[in-house]
Image 1: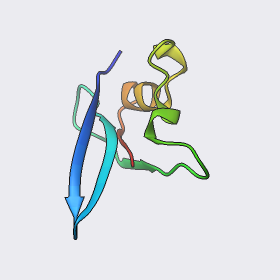
Image 2 (image 1 turned 90 degrees about the horizontal axis):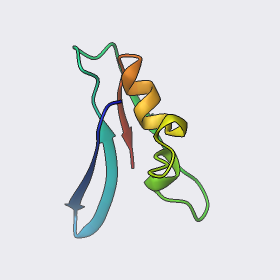
Image 3 (image 1 turned 120 degrees about the vertical axis):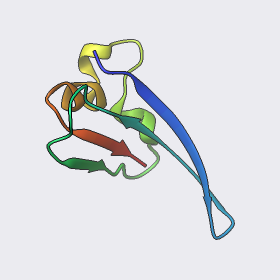
Length: 68
């Protein structure tokens, strides 16, 4: 199962965070996952159930996935 990396950044003084999952080979494409409402990037990565993680599953199919 691909690993998920938590990233933090600051853009124009606004703190941002997200999660990135990379495939083992050259990525086919980039998937950007945007949450809504009161959710966070954690919504796409269920740490207690890695088989249910959208980030890990799409990365295992060869996509680079970024959830902001």
